[in-house]
Length: 126
Image (cartoon, rainbow, N blue to C red; front, side, top):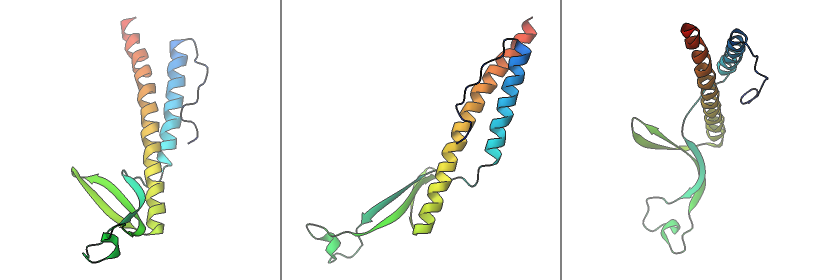
C-alpha cells in the first residue's frame, strides 16, 4: 500500500501546513479511489464433518472431509458462513485485503483532517 504512513517534513507557517495537509489528504483520496471491490470477513481453509452418522468423519479418530475454503462474515448482526471454491477464496482474500487498505487510508485521512481542522479553527481565534 503505497503512501500510507509516509512522513514528510512539515512546513512552518499555518497556511503552508494547511496546504501540505490538503495535498496529502487529496493523495490519500486518490489512492482510495483506485481500490477495487471490498469485503469484510475472513477466509479460512479447514476440514469439516458431514451430516451422515455412519461416516468416517464421525469416527474416533475422525477422518474429516476437505479441507475446504470457507468465508465468514457478519451480515445484519448474524454470522454467515459460505463454502468457497479456490477461485472464490482468492477473490475474497483480495477483497478483504482491499478493505483493510481502505480502513488504513481512512484512518490516515481522519488524522490529517483533524490537524487541518485545528489549523482552520485556530485562524478564527486570531
